[in-house]
Image (cartoon, rainbow, N blue to C red; front, top):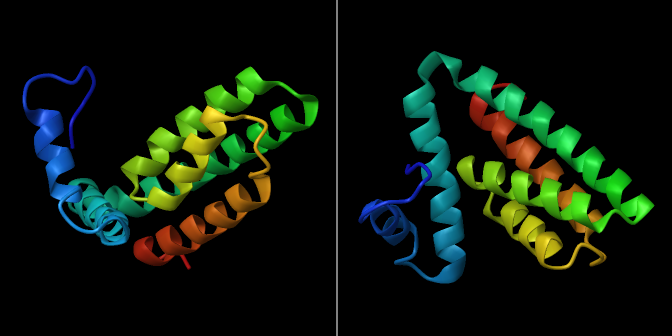
Length: 132
């Protein structure tokens, strides 16, 4: 874990833990590692954090869908960027990747993929938190 603003060697130390394996393995390892770290740090509050994250992520998905439907590219970018950051914190690398692609091109036809990744993330987090 590292906080903004990024200073010194902290970003390199965090990134090096996840970027040493093959790309697919790194994403999987990062997801597992992030959840394990969160569970350790949050302790008994982990399940509540997961609930809050999932509620917020659902609101973000709805906001992206509304913004895309109305052609509000700036709002798609803003919300996708925020969701990408929080997805990274819970180890949802694939969700973060889709969000980054929406930041790069808010008109990309990715809403179905975004919904699918959200569903997978929800399932994985609920199982990890014992909410399923």
